[in-house]
Length: 310
Image 1 (cartoon, rainbow, N blue to C red):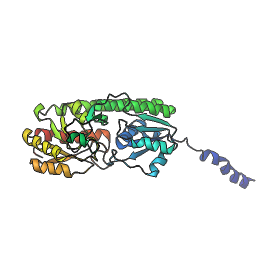
Image 2: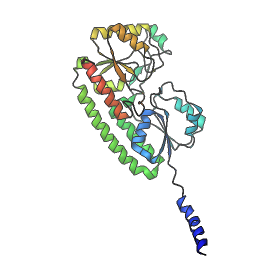
Image 3: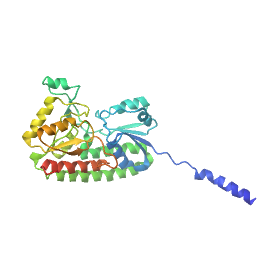
């Protein structure tokens, strides 16, 4: 009898030992910066999938079938909007997604920018002003980034009601860090004389940064990393770099560097490093998260604008 009890008792305990844990809500973010914001707010309370990951160019991203499959059953999809990740809309339709979708730029008044590139180059060649489009890179202003955080946190609370209080608290802590970082950026830029606050980058991704922190950003390419500038645009920028003594010339972590290298060579200046604009670096890189991206970029921009020796 005693032996029979020994055999039965472990069997009776199996249902308790193997009881399934509640499934975490699946959240899909369109690109790495939004993915990091979700991670900072939700931590391991959600199962996170980022479609365009570190160092991936979200402008011309080509989703794979496995990316669309990730949307099936997702409780929440987070996208930037303003035309930046329009491919996400096609994925949502293809996947038949029925969950919640949040646009991180909701409520943000976009700044306009010139639509350079193949589609609008004809107007520029005819001497007409290029068409204006919304600038999608609103995360480049940390105060607007705080707006992203609160919009995402509200969507997470709706998708994961049990974690609503935790999401709200984490979002406020994160927003406080970003506000402090914003103050640091302003103090660093203030060390540069206003006349020297001019930077050349690969493509026009820093408009919000420039407007927020008082820096003029110049780019041979327009908003898209796929656009090719005309010879006249590059020549005009070379003349400006020479005439104004601009010393802050930077690559970005994506796109074709050939145009900027040629510009720097012909203008007689050095490329001062690599900025991160549309995507984070990998975990071992200099910009593995949104906050680190700002610290890295500012640490390069400020001495370059002042003309400090590299």
